[in-house]
Amino acid sequence: MQLLSDRILNMATSATLAMAAKARELRGEGKDIIGLSLGEPDFNTPDFIKEAAIQAINDDYNSYTPVDGYGELKDAIITKFKRDNGLTYAPAQIVVSTGAKQCLANIAGVMLNEGDEVILPCPYWVSYSDIVKLNGGVPVEVKTSIDTDFKMTAAQLEAAITPKTKMLWFSSPCNPSGSVYSEAELRALADVLVKHPNIYVVSDEIYEHINYKGGHASIAQFEDMYNNTITVNGVSKAFAMTGWRIGYIGAPEKIARACNKLQGQITSGANCIAQRAVITALNESPSKVQYMIDEFKVRRDLILDLLNDVEGFNTNTPDGAFYVFPNISHYFGKTLRGKTINNATDFSLYLLEEALVATVTGEAFGNPDCIRISYAASQEQIIEAIKRIKEAVS
Ligand code: PMP
Ligand code: GLU
Image (tube, rainbow, N blue to C red; front, side, top):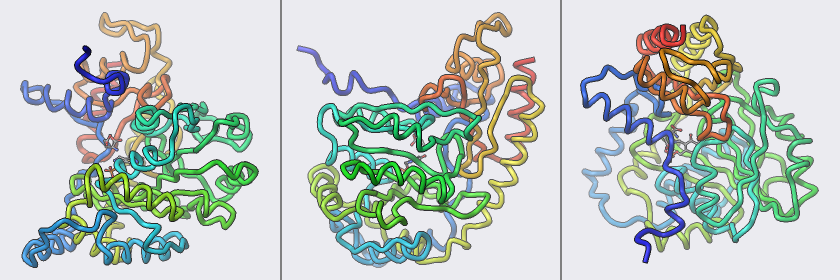
């Protein structure tokens, strides 16, 4: 009998994590790798949050928490949703999980049956497709390009809907394209969705605060979408808390209760100390972390400026998150330093080997013409990385 399940054998390894591991391994061999593959702020968690965690340890928070999160944390999340997004949720609609990733896995686990279709505007975040497939769902990719700032139009959404469509999953600001849907663009998508009341939306807003043009909009803010939307958020990005592993959802109560039930059999409540720290983080004004967003904006402008000078890197202007997603198909079919580049994976590996810069192939995000470069790195590293890339492709 086969050792491993078909489920795991059919699943792809997370390309972001795989590239980060490869960069770590090469660094271990003494290679001077610049890691621009992982979407992870290079800032430390702010002191006021660290202090809350230390206080929680000293206050002997060490027991299992309620599966769906401490009551005080749910209250802080409810306050945050109201304050930042104009969304009203009751405690029974909130579930706290071990990162937004677990929120997404919970949602897929409680909502998908075999063959249910999930619309994924491309490029999408790397794990969406495999989380959907693991739970029996069928990803339906909707291609976009730089011409539409990598955003799906209402007409494209309409054309992708079939009787089997169960959900639409998207992130805004988007990982990996940095695109931000305006309120009007979301309304146009909502106008299509309201004609299909059996379709649910997963609105992944984890980059909400990392937005350089302001005006974050949540699709659940539209009254006619509220009951069909699961809003996903978390503290990894804006609060520089990736390793603390806290994410949360605001959802229709039936869905939240189902996520609670699933999580109760799989992981129980998220880490108690991290939950206490997040109460403090979310009760503060987002302006407390604006210094990080200001610095990301400087880096965004810097990397766009530098890439402008590299042949064959064609990018949109990302309005949020901390990635650029250049189209590098100019190099397909070309031979660089004896290596033939046939696709984005070849190109990303070429940059790793020849420029010692780690990026991620766009294939993992459903766009095989692009690579993703994270600029959550110091300005010095960004300058050096693009210099090396320029040399490696010239
Ligand atoms: N959604 C998006 C769009 C992401 O980029 C990430 C990456 N961390 C996640 C969800 C998962 O975040 P978390 O660290 O909260 O699991
Ligand atoms: N979300 C980040 C990224 O896209 C972190 C890695 C991951 O969780 O896949 O790189």
